[in-house]
Length: 377
Image 1 (cartoon, helix red, strand yellow):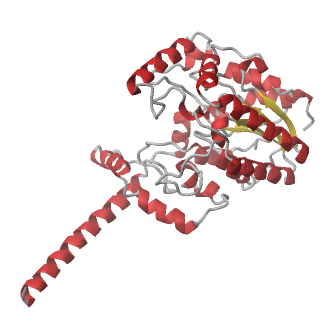
Image 2 (cartoon, rainbow, N blue to C red; image 1 turned 90 degrees about the vertical axis):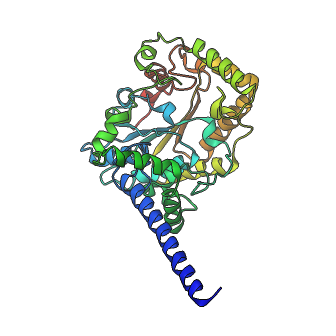
Image 3 (spheres, rainbow, N blue to C red; image 1 turned 30 degrees about the horizontal axis):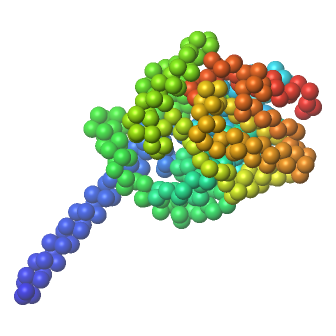
């Protein structure tokens, strides 16, 4: 190849690489601007994922009268009504339940409360699901160990994680900005000209009522079941049976992603995650914040399936024993209540939105079982 040909090849290569680099820069810029997953700390112009961690924190910052009692848990805890807690304790309450909560959330999120001016927590009720303490395999997009993306990319909370790194967060933000799914969502918003900033209050009101309570629930087909379930008129057992048969048939009995058992099908609890939770209890003890631990239930027929097919009973027992040991180590832990079976709080089988999300009726019954009215705040 002569020098002229080599020069021409180099020019074409530079042009091609420049074009590729330009496209990548445009894709990253578009995803950061549209921010459909809320990963980039800026406003969202399109919403694929709502980040309850950020929305509830910002809502708390704006409240003139700051709550002193908090519910922490997964979405299973989101129908714990602040008004019911206030009736029992005479102190202002807030539901800080978040979607897909794990032990990492219970470690990081309570610390964010102490960043808010004028907020002094007196009581935290941890509504624990066993799956929050399972040891999940590391995924290719996992930023910080065990932390779901909604926590990892919410820097205000993830900065408290033991393995937090600003550099790692930046690298993964750039990496996530090049993913196909997010780019498709951003391009869709661009083509439809829906690029107006969605106000924070509007994002909050999409999913939550005042005080952090979740608004609506739907079945696998996307049909709302909120009102009928709250009335106790939803035949949830029949629905679980139907979906169980459908999933088993679809996968020929395979227990993979398509399974009615969901996140509850795992072998044992994670010692690492249990230790993280204890560190959070220790932190709250130093802050003189009282703690109540409530183990969350599942719908009775679903409970039966879990007992038959999984290690659920062993996992609940292990979590209960671990939490009860905390009572002897930390004086701020007032009570550990195992409400994993609805019989333990006189719960109602028909008062579930699905296999594991209790309605406000069952949530109120759990609150009553804690004996909050006998505690001194």
